[in-house]
Structure formats: C-alpha cells, structure tokens
Image (cartoon, one colour):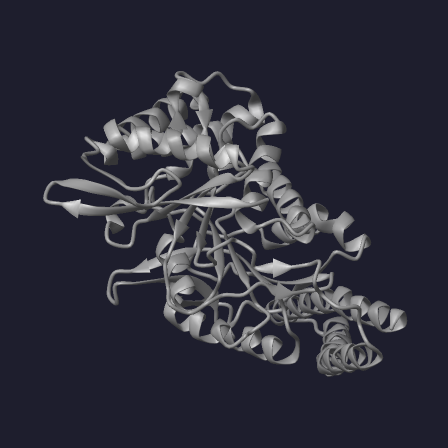
Length: 450
C-alpha cells in the first residue's frame, strides 16, 4: 500500500485554534476554528462508550441515543469544525489526486502544540457527505505524527515477530484480571504462533528490573503492555504503573521507560493496552506516555484511548498482528484491525487504538527483504535460547524446592494462623511456578526445532 501525506498542523490561536495544511497533493491551506463545549461533548461520548461496552454488548440493552449515533454526531461536528472553506476543498482534492495515482491519503495530525486537543478521539472524524469515517479505510488512515530529525529505516525481519508482553496489576490500583488478559492474548495470536509468524513471551514479573533483564537476554520487535496509565500531578509526567518486588505499585515515567527501550535496535513498536477496568478518568490514559516514547526514539506506539471489551481486544490483536506479519505499513495494519472489529458487529470500539508515529512511510518492518537464516544465525539463535532457558531453570528449581518444603511444613503444622500463612505462601509460589512452566516448555520446544 502506497500513501501520500496530508500534513495537518493544529496550534492555539487565543481562544480558538488555527489549522494549517503543511503539505498535501493539493498544496497548502489554512483555517481558524473553534470547538465549542468540546469537553462536554467528550464526556458524553465516553459515557455512551462505557454504557455500550458494559450493557449493550453483554446484555443487548437498549441505549438511547444509540452509541453509534453519538459517535456519528461527534465525528461529524469535529469534521465540520475543522474542514471548512479552502481546508475542505484541499482535503477533497487531495483524496481524489491520491486515488488517481493509485495511492491512499494518510492524514498526519500534528498536535504537539495543542496538547488540549490530544484527548479528543480524532479517529472518529467522519465525512458527512459520504457517510464515512476516515479511519475505517486503508485509503484514509489517521495517525498522530511527530516529526523528528532521526531517520527511521524499515527493519529487515524474517518471521517470527517476537512480542514481549508485560501485564501489571499492583496493589493500590483497581485490580485487573491479568491471567484472563493473558489468555485472551494467547487465544488471539494462537493461530499466528502455530504458523510461525509470531512468538509471544510473557515477563514473569511486571517490574522494571525484570524488563531490563529480559531485554538484555533476548531481542524483541514489539513490547505489549497491559495495565494502568497515569499522569503524576506532582511531577507533571505521564507514565505507567508497574510493580515493585513486593507487588506494590511503582510509578514509572514515560521518560524512564523510553530510556530503557531506546537502546533496543530491533524494537520498533510499543502497544499500550488499557484493558477492562484500567481507565480511571475520561482523559486518555496513555496519550502523554505514547508521545514521550515516540520522542524517545520508538518508531511507533499504539495506545488505547479508552478501555475496550474482551472481544474487541481479541479481534484487534489477531487482525493487527496478522496484517503486520503480512508486511503492511503500520497505519494500514491498524485500519485492517479497525475494520475487523466493526465486522464483528461492534460499531463503536474500533476507534479505541490510536497510532503515534514518526516513521514517515509507516514501514517499521520489511518482511520481504529479510535474508534466509545462515548456519551462523541459526547457531546464534540456539545460543540465545539456551541462555534464556539457563536463566529460567535456577528459578524453577528454587521455587519447586520451596514448594516441597512448604507442603511438608503445612502437613505437620497444627496452629491455624501459621497454617494459613503457609498456605498463602504456597499459593504464591505455585502461581509463580505456573508462570514459568509454559515459558520453559516453549524454550525447550524451540530448541528441539533448532
């Protein structure tokens, strides 16, 4: 898929905003506009989305007005406020011009100078005359674009794409069913794993130390985070909530996370997933974090701007990673995932994922140009697998031995309080061991193939 760009810069202009088309097939244009009561509009939209997800999808409850009508109205008002006069003419001519040249038109929103508008779901932009949402077509994808000086070439990759998953639900925050989320992700990518297109690995702990250690041992192409996004009022920084060694919360700034990920040359994409229960305010929980990560050097970040249902999350992961493994540009890949969610009868949640990007053409991976593995590469891969297995085996042995001791102590202990304490420790160790088992099994299976 080839694209031409429609670069749209939005800046504050007193109590209003001004928008300028910096580059497009139809040249340049500008307009001054306002978004009256956009905070109230956004709050009404979020309420409609919440009701749709919690009641309509699960119980077929009647919603008045229906959420799909709310988003149509919102998207149309947003479009009509921005695209008037020469701006509208420029967009229409650009779409026609790109189509005549056999290309799509990528709408690149530059909102860095208008942070108050970043929380708006621009992905619902709707062209009323055509009754069409722009982001629902591979012909007109919408991205939040950051123009940075460092060039980002496509990374030559031979499948499988390696995905590192971190699931975080520390004490002190609304609990997330991380095992359920993990099983959903495994279900979504099961077929891709069987076909050798992706490898899914889970961090045993949602700590910064565990992440750094795993990135040192193995190279990954994608980091997929499921958990809470935050804005720290004290430091005025965005970030994510991880765990410390005691499973209590640790607020990790996007700056710190970006520093950790910046040196990973193979890592081209971060996915930030606000799963069920993780949003605590109407504001986008990951907008600032995503932008900071891109500024730190990541070519692309996809962040959920509101929590989504299990079915939508599964459909998104399956179709997104499938299209990415097929070699699609990332913005076209996301459009494919949006359409898949819509095709499931879900007329609302397809706009949840937001793409932040600094790759000029959207090609973060080049699947086709990767050379076949040489004997030296195969040998290096086997060495890495053996290194990973060697790193996990001592922990497995220690936990297995501790479980044996705890079971023996539980059998002879007579005090109720002490017996309860031992039982709690035993459950914790068995849970930790259960996390290690599939990782070790996967490594052993991979070694047998090499």
